[in-house]
Amino acid sequence: MARVSRKQNKYIPKVQNTAMKIALYVRLSNEDNGGRGKDSIQNQIELLMEFAEQVGQSEISETYIDNGHTGTDFERPEWERMLEDIKNHKVNCVIVKDLSRFARNYLEAGHYIEHVFPFLNVRFIAVTDGFDTLTATPAQLSYLIPLKNIMNENYARDISKKERSAKKVLRKKGCFLGAYAMYGYEKTSDKHVIGVDPEAAVHVKTIFDLCEKGYSDSAIAKYLNERKVLCPARYKYEKGIVKNAKYANTSGWYPQTIAGILTSRVYIGDMVQGARRSKEIKGKKEVVPKSEWDIVSGTHEAIISKEQFDRVQEIRMDRHRQYEKMIQENRRLAG
Image: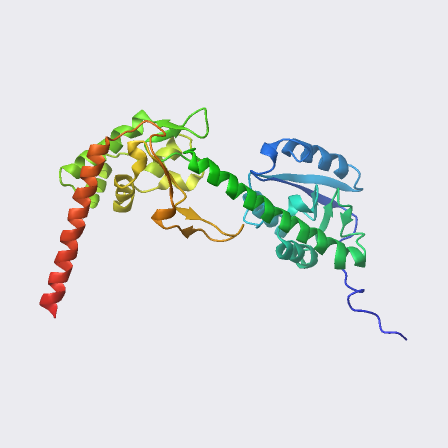
């Protein structure tokens, strides 16, 4: 008898087509045509609901929507919530529009389809790709799905490169690209322009004034904490700018926060960006040398005059020199 190829016998364990508790999973990244077109959140939901109605003996347990999250990794809040529901047996069937909505990472996508879902006894369906683990053929499992996953990952890398190039051009023009404006400023109707936030700007001026009076970073932080001035993270949370509840318990001002404000040219009207970058679509961000930063002067209203800013930099530099001198003297005496 001829030997049967192990590759041909590759299969995924399948759940039975009974009592399906369906999870509709929808994802849209920030690069997906601004949320418009055939892959919009609404279009995905409508497609999946229509398809789910055709799955016999089933009910839609929940719809999970990751809006604005990349498909290059699985660190997505709704995805993680869905996995918890799967582990708690609230879901045993996951339906997505296509494999690119599921993931754009070849290895991790394959791991879920071939190992995680079968282990958890979960049926997985990618509607427009015509893929269903209940009816998947060996050819689909061995060749088609890995090939599609590779294509999706390469597409993500191409989009990432184009996005970085486009952002570089905008930064050179002085366009603001951050998710949140720095403390003391707020986003305007033009997302690439920031304006002064009067409430926070008062405290920025106080910080610079105190530094000129001889206060250290620690002393300034203590001054603001004693007067119960909300630190930047807590201020953004209270204003509704950030939604994550972890910022509700942010404890207060720290010397590092003060130093960041005192040394930032944004307060004299200059746009400073590109201090950190990521080479790969999932790579960790790395610090960029100052000589390579994108700095454009006069892009927005200043909170601090350049004269005061320069005086503060000199004060801080003198303080640093005195500290270094003291350290060297202590080392000399200890030696």
